[in-house]
Amino acid sequence: MIGFFDSGFGGLTVLRSVVDALSEYDYVYFGDNARVPYGNRSQKIVYQFTLQAVDFLFKKGCPLIIIACNAASAKALRRIQRTFLPAAYPERRVLGVIRPSVEEVVEGACKRIGILATEGVVASRVYITEIEKLTTSVQIYQQACPLLVPIVEAGERNWEGTDMIISKYLSQLFAQNAEIDTILLACTHYPLLQKNFKRLVPPRITILEQGPIVARKLQDYLVRHPEIETKISKGGSRTFFTTDASAKFDRLALTFFGQPIDSKLVSLG
Ligand code: DGL
Image (cartoon, rainbow, N blue to C red):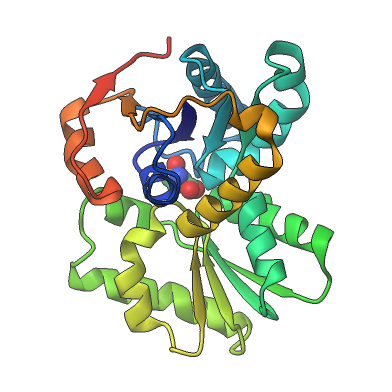
């Protein structure tokens, strides 16, 4: 099984692309809906919650976990990889969504990137740090979009106010540099607003979403790491766990994942 973790529903947008590209594997998804959002929580708390989720997925038998959440990838992934994994599960792996996204930006033709994310991810400056490790030739601009996660969670994508709010964030981004050529949707929820972004962003700008990027990079990772790939079961199953309100999870999951799911409620103590 490949484990997927997110603070709530958002990671299902990433899982959806991965399942489309790599359908043969078994997948187990864990959404911490009882404690979402992570975006504005402290590093200490996000680390503690993420560690509990990772441990839960490892106990389910996953040799590989994808932290499909920008907030948890920004605030917890490094520490889990450096301290928890070597001590507790040295044979297993945990990957995030930031590194693959950054590689995609750097490998493409992008010269001026606009990063749209939650407040916590923007404040962490993780995208700036990671891009600057790989190149100095991309100019980086960030814009926090705090209202977009609640809008998506409330199912208000088609409300007329949504476009107004996105326009405001975009004008704040373009006020930093009008020549931005690429926008990265660096939050799991924003692909659900892809149609709104397409309407509002000038057509010369490339919009990158993380699902297809993570799917391609994961495919590549599995080819390069047969020692992990051979341990992943291949029965085509999908299992979903949530820490809150299974009925709501199942309803909204249809929007995020694109097909009906049947989730199981768990408590992380
Ligand atoms: N999954 C989070 C992310 O990608 C968004 C929701 C949250 O703040 O927990 O940043």
